[in-house]
Image (cartoon, rainbow, N blue to C red):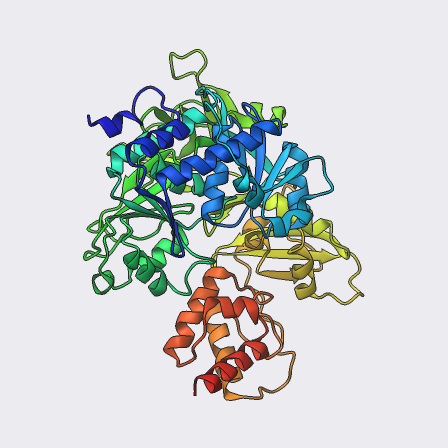
Length: 592
């Protein structure tokens, strides 16, 4: 065992202390790189200690939640590490979080401090929390003294997931869970100071912890993508090659797009790609120049609970498994009475061991329902988490993921409680009943609504726009269809299975009459192809018709293949078809 590996291995090694150790051993090694900015380990640790001192002065101590309201940036990493060095626990949020959801998170966690940019500070004022500017915190003189002592059961971070009651629920993840994740990551993928690891996830996504802490606790370099993801899978692959990335994580939907890229043409140093978030349905091509690993893990199990390398030579009909448990973690496949089922039999997956979270914040009843005493371990304090996922054990002992046992779904790597979306729909005027499902055709979130008054006009686009004020974009259904009544099961419940296979609603009729230019006509054809819809008018919105960020990337790639030079960011800026067409025309004339 090398000296460096001693810093992160053992019964328990605090992750913040490991980063401090690397700051002493390799002070000039790049820790974070972003858009030409390089932050060394010495700079990262010194700035984080400076923030920790400010936080302590504002009352942050062991287990105190601190909300981070920062975009993907070196300052976000500095702030998160600073919170941990002060003894607190960070709460990641997105800067474009809808006001209603943000208010619910702030009210639930009751964080005494919010760290954000000076320009955004006003958005977070008015509550009980002190709003601190990260710029001003970094200007404070002096460095903190000794860092807070960390115990394995102390809170590391608080992450909010979709809640079935209609409100997001906070998952309490301890230091020992993250330390176990870091140790497994290093041992499995042999991460060293020369490695460069991507950071693509939103700070509100638990995968952010998977990208950041195994990298920094093992002395590697964290490579932050600038702004949104690149415009296409090809551009992302080129960025990975140009940054000499060696290890990356991507959600399943994005990883699948990346597998067929001509990696040999791009070159680069990528040796491992990790993916997870949804069921993986395919194997990599035979000439893939790096290893592919399929990860599985609910938020409640410290990001990753099981893993498996995905071979290229498996039978096409075989779905890649989710593998076996991480070290110090256990998996059980149980029946309705929580008894083990025979190998090969479908059952619910329960997870025990070091990675199990502490529970849900302020929800003791829900915590007692999902976090149970573990009867299969001699540890009298052992607990296991009921995932609600259906699996079966394969002959080699690995697990195959089959689906959900309840109404929770995953879409593009995000876990969504359909009940939260339905509750938001019911809050909107004109809605009497609402059901949301993940459609089996097209892998998209769709909503069905019974209007309160069928005589009143029903505008699905307006409903989606109002819903976007309450929910993140990935939770807004791509289509909302009015129904006279909802189909019911024999038990009188909404028949979700019938709705999930119901033909998808056609796009609304063109709203702007005939197309004015050939560019508009070609864009309409491209929108229909990408969104799998029948029509798109010149005054229609890409996102009102069901588009999302990943489809914007696909549209940009397809448009370039057809001779139209656009970027994914252009689709966000000009979401109306005629506006996007006009921007293309102006750009072409300017170039000429």
